[in-house]
Image (tube, rainbow, N blue to C red; front, side, top):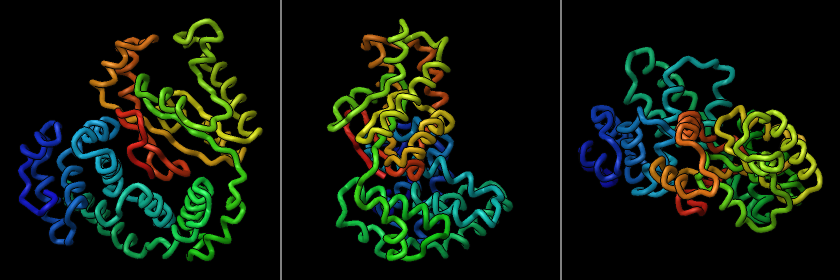
Amino acid sequence: VRSGAPVDAAALAAATGTEAGDAGAARATAAALDAAGRTGDDRLAGVLAALLRRSPRAALAPALARTVGMPLARRVADLVGLHPSLHHPYPDEERRTGLVRMSFAADLPLLHTLAAAVAQDDGAREQVEWSALHAEELREPEGLREAFADLAPDAADRCLAQAREAYALGRVATAEEAVAATWRWRSGDFPRLVHLVGPSGSGKSTFARGLPGVGAYVSLDDLRLARGSRADQKANGEVLREGLDRLDAALAAGGTVVWDATSLNAHQRSLVHAVARRRDALLTHAVALVDEAELLRRNGRRDHPVPPEVLASQLHRFVPPYPGQAHRTWYVGASGTVEDRA
């Protein structure tokens, strides 16, 4: 597929260890990408996304990572998650900002090619065509990343993220304007928050305990244990409020703070994000992506295993964040290390 060969959907599914998906969509996407001159990993990502477009996004990245690696697997999963939104009407006054934010997670021409190839009716195709016309006008300011190359890594990541958001909102148009707009963060004088995300047993705590320079660690399980039992969910509201208060105090003191909870969906993460914004912290999502079979195996060996039905419920509710929903994102694979960054 990388080299431009015809798509054998069954062989591709077997090679990636996934179930056979939508072969017709995969072939249509390959033809559209060929016409657009997209080759290599671009072609493979688009074809895999079309083939597996009905797969749950949260399960797709860890399943594919075993054979294609986390960077490509995550890219495919984000294409699967994002492309259906292009089939529906979107307010034109908000379209530019929405497309720029999408570009943080996906290559926009590839995303539109995929969405057009798998559209089910004329209305959906028209929506994709209209969106693609708007996307053609979007170009990240030239030299944006290079503008922050001389900064310390955390400051560079923070300034780049803030500059991209300012570009999405139409507040800057050039690298020079971006530098001026992000001057306050160039010194690196801000607290850091590492926000762990992922189901129980995915290796979040083990990963975070190995991070250097952590000044404070806020774990909801530890707070429950202090009340008598880490499995007791009856006082979750009080535990969460206590955890958020501790997080606020730790960020106010400066340094690096870790928030350890499953944080499975956007609503749960938003409560932590609000504290980070109030304290002007650099926000890093550390997203643990481990496939279900490995999670079940690990759960059986844990000192504090969760009931199987609880783990199944977590996997059903897990909605990983997209790039751009934090200043930066680390993807932690089954190896327990950061296997991809955004």
